[in-house]
Image (cartoon, rainbow, N blue to C red; front, side, top):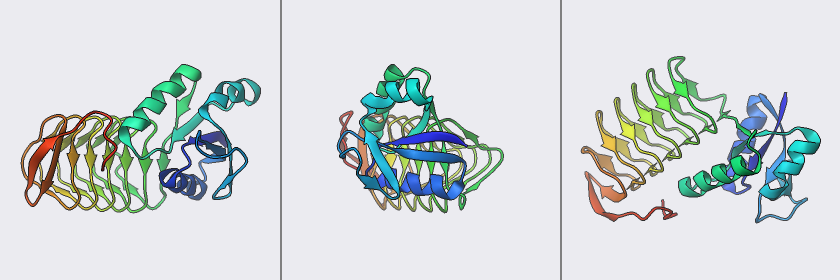
Length: 220
């Protein structure tokens, strides 16, 4: 098995560690995190240091694969760019829970986290560094663009497009044939029956635009 690291040791990173352990596809050697003390333990794994140790790790042990365990979309994007600058050879893996149901006709990018109970239907495309969280379902022929996230319990109909860096919060429902733009947040429990553009915060039943969203806003 290839040796890998998880960048980010918060709650989301712990979930990814559990997925990798259950799937058995990779050998997780530890976590990379700037905010945790080196040598501390996350699950059964050690915090190895900050991302700055990755070039040395690659040079000395050849470890050049892993996944970013950061839940915030914008922060995950910035970390992905930083890692590629530090180690251009670094390859991002997918963490796919064995209890997810993924059609063979789904197209997956890299750096994706797919949690337990997820259903992905035929014709759907999940771009790089997306999160599809616990017990969410994505209908047929959807496109989920890079660095976006789908929270637990979300239901997405067919032919839905979710823009880069956008978020569908816990328990929301998105009707068929909906386009949601870039860096847009749909609030928890919302019902989406119309399109939304870029940089919008929307919620409600049905969802309505409640204002603009600044790039880098960490609210979910």
